[in-house]
Structure formats: C-alpha cells, structure tokens
Image (cartoon, rainbow, N blue to C red):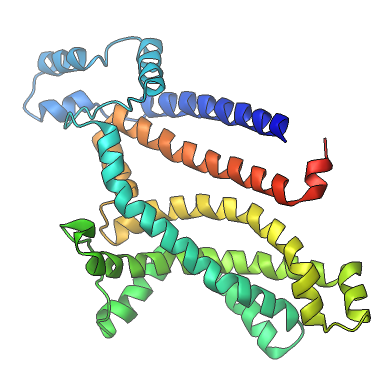
Length: 316
C-alpha cells in the first residue's frame, strides 16, 4: 500500500508540474497586455513599456516561470499585478463562498441520486422505474445555465422564497442569509450533476443485481432488495466513489459558471474577472490551485478504493 501511495504521489506531482507549464504558456498567448490595462487608454507606448519593465513582464519566459515556481515552493502564490494584494489571501477569501457552494452541491447530488438510482434499477421495466430513468436522462442533458435560470424564475421570481443573486456583504457573519444565497446555486449544480450520477448508480446497480452472489443470496431466502442491499451495494459503492472524483471536477467547472450567473463573489467569478483583466500571475496561480485540487481528489479516491477493496490491494 505504501509503495502504491508513493507512486501515486509522484504521478500527482508530475501532473502538477505539467499543468503548471501548460497554464503558464497558454496564458502568454492570450491577447491583451496587463501593462496597457494598468496604464490606461491615455498612456503612451513608452509609458506602457516602462510599466511592463517595472512589472518584470519583459523578462524571458523561462525566468518568469522559474520565479513563479520558486515562489510556489516557498508557499508564495504571488501578488496581483493590478491590486498588489497577495493571491493566497484573495483565494482564501473567495474560498469561503466557493467551498460551501461545492460541498452543498455535492450533498444535494448525493441525497437524491443514490436512492433514486437504486430505486430505478430495482423498478426496471415498470412505469415508475422508467419514469425515473427518463427524468435522469432529461436532467443530465439540461445546460447548467438554463437550469439556474429556471430555478430563479420559480423560487425567486414566482414564489419569492430565495434571493436571485448576490451574497451578504458581511459574509458568514450572517449565516442564515449566506446559506439562503447559496441554496439556488447549489441546487442548480447539484441537480444537473446528481442526474448524471443517478444514471451511473442505476447502471452499476443493474450490474450488481445480475451478479451470481446476489442471485445466490436471493435463492437462500433473501428478497431481491435485501440481497442487493446486503451484498450488492458495497460493490456499487466502489464504482460510485470513482465517479465522485469526476463529479467534484464537474462541480468545480460548474461553480465558475454559476458564480457568474448568481453574482457570487467566489473563486470562479474572480477567475473570470482576472482573465479579462490579464492579471497573469494571479490567474496562473488560481488555475494551478484548482488543478491541484482536482488532482488531489483523484489521488484520495484512488487511495480510498485501494483501502476498502481487497481485490485492488492484492493487485500489483
């Protein structure tokens, strides 16, 4: 197990290194010049060149990259070219919105996808089982923006139960208002991601129902449902854990869109704003932080599967 963990850690670090190179180079080919943004529309070319030199943007790309990586190794994510604020502080501040949004979205997705996915499998061939499958297929195909707009129309405009946009200025000092502002965004992400997870849970449950050990347990006197719960669901859970890693990545991507739609001051909205302003040091650190988060989730999923599945522990 230790050897496997070390191997996966090396692959994780290698993935982060490759991602850092790709992020750094990709941002340098985007159009626009942050020095021109800082200088304003009235700046002369000489003034823009002086700003670029002062910011170190005229240095060779290799030097800029090694300086950035060296700072990361020291725990320094850099500073914003436009505001001069430490990137780490801004990420920590915005994470107070994005992290609760992601956790709440995941809980919503799990709350309905697992029981309804199992129910759809058990009711296969019946009207209610077919209805659940059709609903999952339909919801999974819904664009997240359209789903968000529909939820706003129903719960914010028609019923007036929840706020349509924004986040409290005093943040989590007012927890009731903060949670209310996250419910619709979390529902938007959770319903779409949960529908995709529900389809997978149904498929994995159907495979488990057809396994010999479930049929044998049923032949010994257990009902099909009890046989599935006792012997089949643990194997379904192993498959679901794998998909959850992908779902987390989907939630991260969804947060970038949803924070724009609901005007939430989170990491996703900050990232979109910084890309538009060409704040390269800030954007590259934000992208690498998000990439690292997704890679770490995959690392944890692999280790958890290895720990709970004896077949994987015995594999080379």
